[in-house]
Length: 159
Image 1 (cartoon, rainbow, N blue to C red):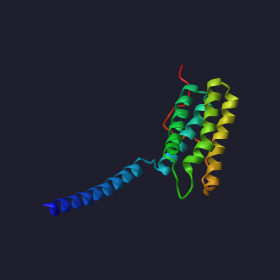
Image 2 (image 1 turned 90 degrees about the horizontal axis):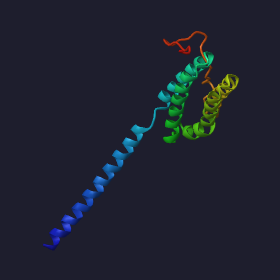
Image 3 (image 1 turned 90 degrees about the vertical axis):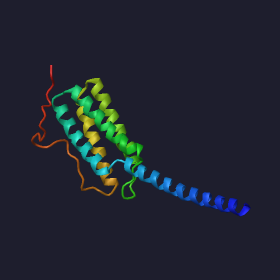
Image 4 (image 1 turned 45 degrees about the horizontal axis):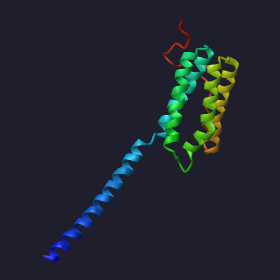
């Protein structure tokens, strides 16, 4: 009887170890799935920055508020994930280089100072490009807008 109890105990210890390893592997897989894709997030950010330029051109603060919020959310995804890409701390860089410039842009919009809004938008773009340089991707250069509006969207204010 004693030997059977020892065998069952050993079996249960081994089984719990195996299950613990499987749970840890699943947790790691879920964590990886929850991390934002850098490419997808940067594509969204580039599109939003581009649309911000058109909203600024039209001094459309309502639309600008919407797009700034979307830009903040995309940046927060990278920050919260503490994303690292090819050994580059993209999440940390986003927090230190980009996030403060977005807040400054938002403050300028709230103040209704369109000259300051335009200036702060240039600072946002420069932060993006500085980050690309610091991570070894200087060939990725974000511009304010294309020469022709590529979006099927009217950026003018609605009364």
